[in-house]
Image 1 (cartoon, rainbow, N blue to C red):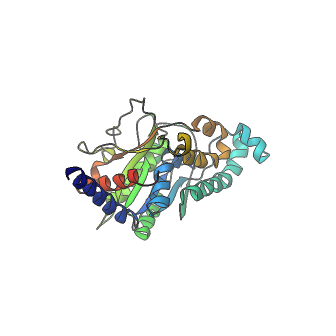
Image 2: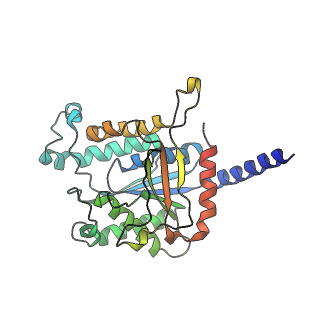
Image 3: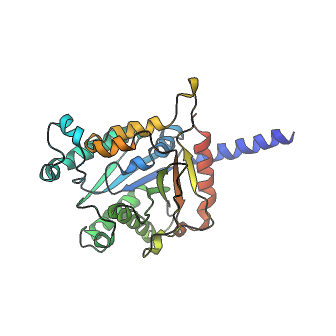
Length: 291
């Protein structure tokens, strides 16, 4: 009898979470096309298994990323050349992003077209308005948030070793949500990790809005568990489908293919404790969905 009651309780919790997830509206905020490859399985499951919807806001113009050695043969132009890349990559990479979005089920794309300049780990020039038009990005984010009435925001974990663009995009998303009045979406920072990793995150020094709520767990979506005939299926194939659409980044995507075991998400302190229960229910539903 006790086991039956336990199973019934689990079923009720999972069912309640799934009902909420069916109307869940998510906005993904990233700096570059292919940043969404850090958590594509979660997005796929949110949309295609739980029946939610998602849009994506891209901060840069996508004119960087000169590692397309094999892609140069595919596109018939030298994508390792910066002059060529500056001219052709914005259109190519945005098209690739939208194709990747088709795999996951993303509905709308918003392009803010800030310069995708150089690799750096210092977000200050971008957040200070010296490299990006910060005021314009803030206005655009405010408009997208007001129009979309989102429940959830996904962005990259702004850890210290990350690209400055990644960190700046996440900080701008957090600040945009903080500016909102009334009901605010919950913001999570995500990335893919290996089970063998020792990665952890609590806060990006100098940016208090990135502080993680200490009492919040790290939420996980397992992408590597096997199922089906002979155990030859896993959700890593979804991540590979998404990565494969980013052909112009053939070097980076080749290294990334079929890697990573878990998509992990950190709960930012600015969400407050009231969002913990809905997020717990959401990840319970994600775990229960699919295969």
